[in-house]
Length: 387
Image (tube, rainbow, N blue to C red; front, side):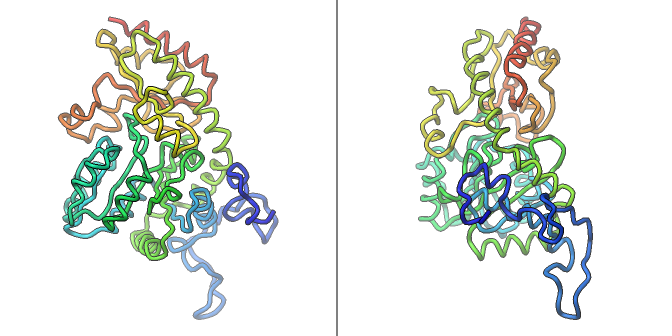
């Protein structure tokens, strides 16, 4: 099949990037488990020298994720945090980054504890409020980092509006697209400069690998990112690159089930008297529903909900039988966490309180199990949590 004729994303998931192996005819890209490569002669190689610099399995993955995000360049890293660190390494002493106000705790931590030591600062803003962004775009600001929907409150940002504002002020727009995946949302097409993922999540999809990816279109920006990747060495291993390609092949069918289940569970939770609030951008009364509908092809498989005061969140969590208490998200199995003590524990309590991350807020990554079994599990846990 000619690559130029592939327009449907479900086909690109299977055949995008580098499709199979030309040498043997293998339909799957092989795992090139090697550290170095025999050179043809002094000064001439086969295109590969050393696997930190380039590896055929990783290259196949990088081309695939770039194609999925409608980008020209993809880079694969050993974790989502390694990917984020590489992007932040683009900046210099005195630079400031504006970040979504309820950003993932690890993103906050690396800025607050690591990059602050190099004179790179940050500021929380409501990226859904363009006027607030404009007000804080001082000369020190070099980038705006957006999560949309945010983790864990599922707030929605208009990517195109932020990107347009950023371009006028000559700053970069960086979008963490982990929650949506390129199956549902493609920020580069909306004007973003850099897209990144914790590929551990929906791209991998099976809770069996750790990975991160970064995608860009601009030649100069991509060269800088590649230089950082090669120099710092946080590259993804061949075996994990292979597993990630395999996971991506089923991204479409998985995401359809994830969000079908999530939509049903969100609607059901909203009707329960023991639930104080449900956060899901697929609900028509969600503040970001209209923007989400316009810029994405669905609302995804992530939701959060807050229990009423008389329900003990610890008892609720501890009595779940099918849904697993665990960090991470985006796997085929349903996972629940308490952000205040888990994913967002690194954010100071006063900041958590201010942005709405309460102790009774629970984040649910809805898996692809039978949704009726999930509802039964949630119902019995809620009964046992009642005070």
